[in-house]
Length: 160
Image (cartoon, rainbow, N blue to C red):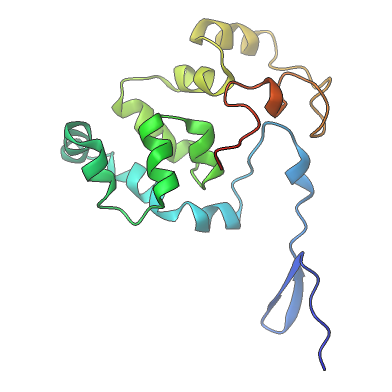
């Protein structure tokens, strides 16, 4: 009888590989790792399609119909339609791919980043010029700093 693997590991070519993610306790941060990459593959492929002018036109003409051409999950499609980039990231979107959506909508990356923090573009720019968010209260999930989920515009991430 074999011993079951711990939930935080997998067997890869006969070797046990740990899947512990010590970075999963950083508030306001989604690390785009291999798991996120697999989860968001079609979402990110859709975003890359927006590099072509004809695809941007088709998307803007009928967003839902264009999204339905992609093997994305329904949740990913809803996140795109809502233009909720935090939600898109929780479902596997990579911010550098998601930037194509913002560009399609005529937004700068700074405007997009501001929307992800609940700040205006001006507020976001000012915060970044001042050195970004303080680490105080933002080192671990459960503290009460400005990057904590309960202090973000999309809340504690209940959509994902």
